[in-house]
Amino acid sequence: MTLKTLLAAAALVACAAGAAQAQDVTPPGFRLPPMPPITATTPAKELFGRVTRPSTGRERSIGFYSKGCLASASMLPLSGPTWQVMRPSRDRFYGRLTLVSFIQRFSKRVASNTSWPGVLVGDMSQPRGGPMIKGHASHQIGLDVDIWLRPMPNQELTMAQRETLMSTNVVAENRIDLNRFWSANHMQVLKDAALDPQVERILVNPAIKRAVCRDARGDRGWLQKVRPQWGHDYHFHVRLGCPAGEASCKPQADVVPGDGCGKALDWWFTPGRLFPRPPKIPPKPRPPMTLKDLPADCAAVIREP
Image (cartoon, rainbow, N blue to C red; front, side, top):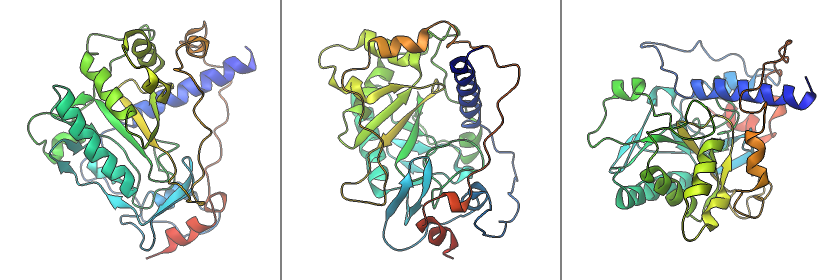
């Protein structure tokens, strides 16, 4: 088995696990153990995953999407006219004020442009961002949000329903096409998100990207923001860009020019990539990120009372 195949298998396993974890149901009455001592070598997820309120001071995204933290986060209300937050027990409904504002206006557009009453909002960031005890590698600096591929119902869900209701997988078992749950509404929801000027990327399953490439009509400029990634078969991941002039926020490389519907997309469907055989010897898990691995300012963010 080649190194590329091993890497592809590891990526698929990791993303499949992440996809399952993103919908995990929290057992009733579950409580995390107390926060461990704050040291430079303590796993950062054990610290940031236990803080229950934002820090104070100036709002900042510190570091990179998958290696950083968030100062002075804003909270998205659990319910609004056109959105409802799912899995609220996770306490992952925080972000930059720009992210909160995006969700509010985007969900309003969805309610206007589709038959969906609104959107179901998955994970954003923790109260102070940072690595999570379980789940995402990114979502650390308050600029990421998952939107479920299931419409918000007409009625307000109870807290119990929000903890147990599952989203809808729209990808067929063969992983190369979509199933009967995919609709024109889904396409419009993606388009509404992509047309927002603050959105930098939208991550979807490769099969969703292929369908969008096939079915989009008229102006196709928005397709550039829609990027394929393993998993993402029951939700899509929206990422906003770093605020202009904020040096503490580390941006991603620019999105590749073009609509992303050519040879680069075909790569995801080549033999051995859709269903790669797991390696005989599983790769060793990476050591957990520690506080000393994060930008220096994150130590002050986590130590604030």
